Amino acid sequence: MTLALAGFNPVREDAAMNVELQVIGSALRSIAEEMGVVLIRSAFSANIKERRDCSTALFDERGRMIAQAEHIPVHLGAMPDAVAAAMSLGLTLGQVCVLNDPYTGGTHLPDITLVSRTDLGYAVSRAHHADVGGMEPSSLPANSSELYQEGLIIPPVRLTDEVLTVMLANMRNPDERRGDLRAQIAAHHLAERRLRELCERRGRERVAAAMDELYAYSERIVRAAIARLPDGRWEARDVVEALDGEPELRVAVEIAGEEIRIDFAGTSPQYPGNLNCPLSVTKSACYFVVRCLTEPDLPASGGAFAPVAVTAPRGCLVNAQPPAAVVAGNTETSSRITDVVFRAFGEGMPVPAQGQGTMNNVALGNERFTYYETVGGGQGACPEADGPSAVHVAMSNTLSTPVEALELSYPLRVERWELRLGSGGAGKHRGGDGVVRELLVLEPCRVSILSERRAHPPRGAAAGADGDRGRNLLNGEELPAKVTRSLEAGDVIRLETPGGGGFGQLA
Image (cartoon, rainbow, N blue to C red; front, side, top):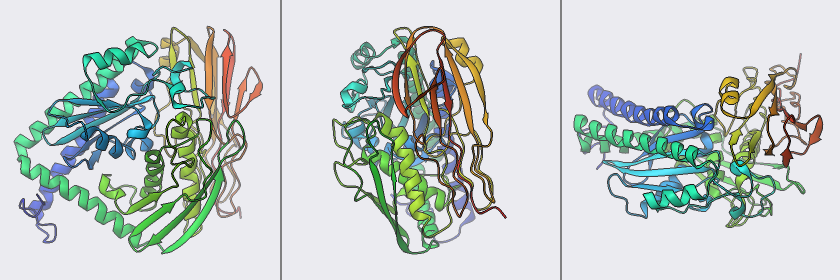
């Protein structure tokens, strides 16, 4: 039913109706946020409990995103495809679907998604688990060439005790995995209860109608914002730093009236390594850019994505087909998609200088423990201000693991964690600085690093200087951008993360 049929009138400015719409919208967003709080506070692993590498959202009965918590952009933009896959199972109230398959709505295998049926639509959570099996501890190998090597592949399936048993049998540190999955399930129980309470308090039809209008409202606002941008078509290119060669990203962006088209024709074919992206991740990166350029403070819903069309040739780097490996595509290639799409729009309007363009993934583990973190860096300066330093930018939105939590839980010691002063690009507005992070390992283990911007620096804008490139080192020896190594007790891993580009010429 439409909002107007439910008694709301979006055309006639009725204060009472608008107030009720705002109240219901705030309640829905509050439920999504409370889901995230429950998940974070109940989780076992530092990756979810401390770094908050997870996302939660609510969808309506048609599978449209209505409300989301302000979590991880690369998770949230790809969620609608996961819900569409889960809906094919015909879930009933209280049933939960689990999936991580990147080719049926997932992102990469460590991101396990749960979708549950509620009284009015679906609740969704997505959390990065510190291990899902595969050829390397923590499930982030630098040299995987097939999806099968990266961990257990879970197609959309009902989560039952038997399915959970099979999952845990294929994952390292199963007790921690079980704890994190139970935390996700607890978040879903909370969402089901809160939505039931909201429907009882406001009326099911009123809440459903408000969902319709919230979706439509986001679409109207974003369309109006796009209409204020200049019409035109612009192109850009960039490369990603692979183990062998530099696959190319090519993009053309077009603004026509109140719609945006983003096309990746000419992008390199999917890569034999793990830098590939399923199209859902590519769309997520593009949606993030459009949101930044239009209405960044708008409470996001799927309606904000409706005016944006994203296309890419089947079988290319950003629309890979199974069984292509994708573990670095979700983190690194998605970050570079953000960069290249911003760069294309920058041909026609002011945009910020490039940020670090990487998540600086570090995964460590052995038969006893698995640990994963991303490391912040510098953000690019914008036309009005310097870029922030030491932040998780663009497609990431996590925190850093506190030293105390890391050292208490894992055989690791933080030797150094400081700003990489002067690594941001100079300009009228200076790019943010990266960081230096050193980890001393206290027992033999394996390490995998997936990073970017080690060969090519983040670009400045409007004559601003580039930021410094990042560096990876093992006991002082320079490592490539993507690498997996065996470590002994006493080895030191050092990451020097990139600085952001500067904006504008120095006077």
